[in-house]
Image (cartoon, helix red, strand yellow):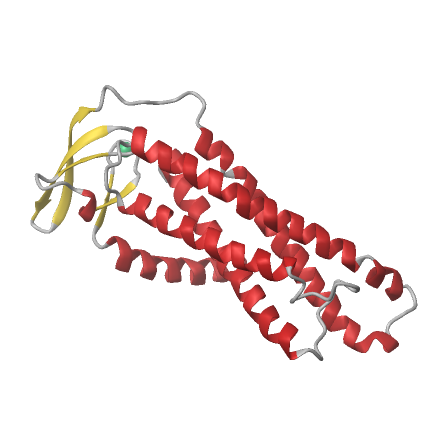
Amino acid sequence: MISEIKQLTGSVSEAFKKKYYGKTFRCPVCHLELAHSDLDAHGLVVCPLCGVVMDVQDVYGHTVPVVNDVELLRPQPKARTHPMAAHLPIGLFPLAAFGAGLLLLVSLLDVINSRLPACWQSVIERMPLIADMTLVLLAVSVVSSAMTSASGYWDWKNRYRGRPYRIIRLKLVFSWIFLATGLIAMTLHGAGVVFSAGTGLIDFASSQQLILGTVYFSMLAANMVVIATLGHVGGNLVFGK
Ligand SMILES: [Zn+2]
C-alpha cells in the first residue's frame, strides 16, 4: 500500500519535475541534480552544494559534466541558519493541519451527537482549546516561515552568489506561495469564520462556514504539498540526494 502511494506521488512529481527543470544531469561529485538551464552562456555551472566548477558538454545527446575546478572563496558560514530555521515551519505546520483535521472529524461526528456515548461530551468540551492551539501552531509556522525564507534568500545571495539555479527559483516561488496561502488560512481561522467561536467546531448549517471552510482546508492541503516540496528540495541542497 505504502509503496503504491510512493509510486503514485513519485510519478506525479517526476512529471512536474520534467516540465519545470527540462533536461537534467547530476553533479559527478555530490550527485545533486541540476538543470541544463542552470548553465551560463559558456556551458559552465558551479554546483551550489559542493562548489565544483563544471564544463557541461552534450556528446551525441548524452550530458557529460567535466569538473574543471573547485570554487575556493566560498562563504561557508558555520552557523547555517537557513537549514536550522527551516525546522520551525516544517515541524509545526503538519501539527496545525492535524489539529484542523481533528476539528473537521469531530464536527462531522457531532452531526450524529445523540447516537454517541455520554463520554462524547467531554471530547466536545475540549474542542475550543484544540481550535485555539491549532491557530497558534498555524500562526507560528506561517510567521516563522517568513524568517526562514529570508535566511534562505541571504544564503543564496552570499553562499551561492545569487547565481540562477532552477532549484532556488522553485524554492523562492514556493516560499511566497506558502506565506500567502498560510496567511489567508490564518486570517480565516482567526476571524472565526471557519470554526464557531463557542464550540470550536464547523457549523454545517451555515453556508458561510461551509464555503470558507472548504477554502481553508484546500489551502492547508495545498500548503502541505508546498512545504513537503520545499523540505525535500532543501534536503537535496544539503545532502545531494
Ligand atoms: Zn556537486
